[in-house]
Length: 239
Image (cartoon, rainbow, N blue to C red):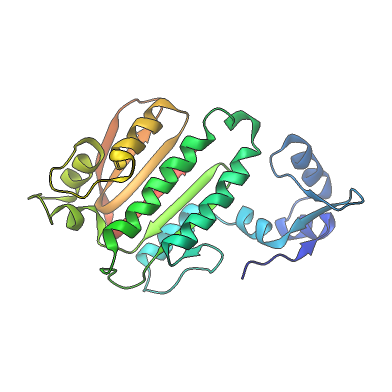
């Protein structure tokens, strides 16, 4: 269950090891907004502080590479229905950011695409822990999704002959594959690529021993080998 305990601004400052003046400045600037009581007093929810303090990318990566165990309940989506519920919460959070007004639905759409792929491609075939880790921090403008599933190479090898993880990622992000069941919106990860290339969004996507890096500035798909092996899929999004 999510930790909804309320903390005063003084307690929150102590937890984050900053001053109350810093928290008030972050509140005014929108970097880390406080919540308000009906009387107008600032307060913070402990879970929000926990998320802000941690590195959600490192947490997702560690979960993928560690001994199999369920991730923290606040971020764990064991079923597609729970993922969609948390995705709705992300949408509500992004709606509040004025600078994302024009394209926050696209951020939600690519997150939904990646998360739905995890469930669609691993249905009945999860190697150990089913479901995905899905965490986000709208203050740091970061989203992380991770699954311990079959991965891109093993998924595509069901229908075509592929030699390595790098080829698998290139095909998944750039080619329409005959024989695959229809992907959501008809494009799958190709839809993700199109959105990221045309918006101020960055994506690192890991599967097997390969990594895709996409940024709006570079305007191209970069694929490289990794030193570590990711048996499922890991997506790190910055916006």
